[in-house]
Amino acid sequence: MTTNSTFSFVKGYSFSFEDEGRLIEAWFSAFSGLEKVFVNGELVSSQRNYSKNSTNLFEIGENEYSTSLEVVSLLKGPFICTLRKNGEAYKRKKLIFPRAVANSSKNPFILRFLFYILLGLVFGFSKNYFDFPSWSTYIFLAILFIFVFAYHYKTNKNGGPLIEDEEIV
Image (cartoon, rainbow, N blue to C red):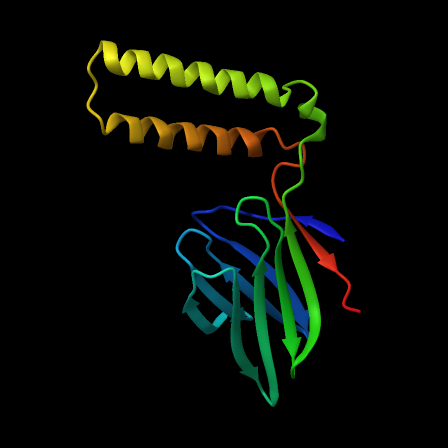
């Protein structure tokens, strides 16, 4: 089963699991490193983590639970969240970033690459001609990064990343 997610580097992303009528939600922020786990809307675990792998431990009644996050690549994904119950992997979800296959033929990589090179040349010429301060280069690069990142997700025909249930073997 694949579902849409509300993914945002700034607002974070979440994985929801159901167990014995309880809703367990593991929320992570790639931007701030904050991680929170909620059970039926009540916060049961919170920590800050900047590594590619993390684990949050909590208890519900006599059962020990944990959520673990494995980030294969921060920019390409997938982000894999596993719910463990009493030490055994119980449920797993994967946040994937599908490629915009339909749009790849409209805008081949080489044309986008040449566009960014041309944009850099125009900025470099303008910086020297108008004598922009040196810090303007960093602002230009930040705006360019945001533009490229936003374009990548806007062209995704699925509307953004997807959360996919994964079978536990």
